Image (cartoon, rainbow, N blue to C red; front, top):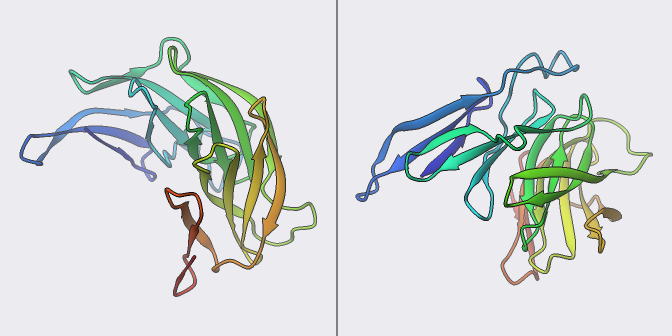
Length: 222
């Protein structure tokens, strides 16, 4: 299966892949029925990412327009997505604007970057029920940070000890957070010397290097 998030309409889609690699018509299409308090950005649902959980039983959809992570049970036989009967969604702060999430390597926690209020939220995750619960939320930037600040991507280091978030704006930056024993996060660094408007970045499998792609720069910095 392939999963897709449709930002404009808010729909999330599951599509089967045939043995020859051909993509079949959608097996399931779902959408949140919600909005948020920031009228310019949250008049309706805006699915920003789709992420299958490590057990491949639930599809998580951070919806920027709803201030929720929508949780769908996934049936691999039929390809159907249905609202998780145990917990249909995880609610974030009004006006948070959840954009992307990343799982801890052991699958017991996850980290959500929120675009509108410039925060990262640490959560526990129960793979048996698809349940999400908040641990804590921290800003991705210093209190003195001025101008636009729009977080974009979030990644967990392969060693499971750190999580990173990129923030776009006049003072574009990559923020580093320590993952504590209780899986909460504490910000320990804000690095501003990064490619302009860092829309995405990733840590290589060895954990030694980070590659940062600046939307408004002409290069990827290592």
